[in-house]
Image (cartoon, rainbow, N blue to C red; front, side, top):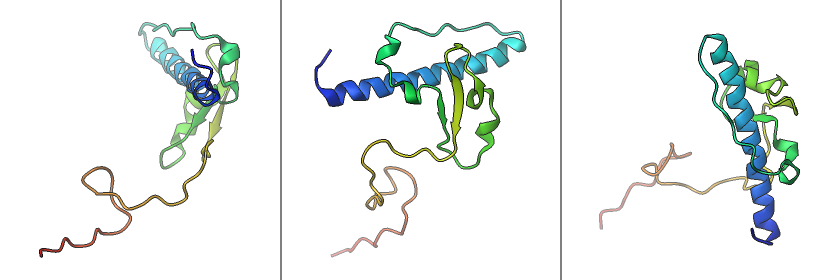
Length: 122
């Protein structure tokens, strides 16, 4: 592993988010098992003391609406028994914030904030 503090911090964050996602899946699996389906194991090979634990049980709502707050994955005890789910309706970026992104070509992704200027035919 690297000694670079930025890389180590990023990996710690990503592992913690993986904990949330694993617990999300486990909560969904619990619901599926109640309907008669089988379980799926989740790996636990990464040392938890190196995980960015403050985000490990947070559900980040990155969609419109708040319907996801009602899911088993967003509230109550986590299936691993090590944490309590926390719902974040409006999660904030953890790094530097860019308040306004530049114009993008709509063919690449999403809908532009304003129409692209007409192409000149010179």
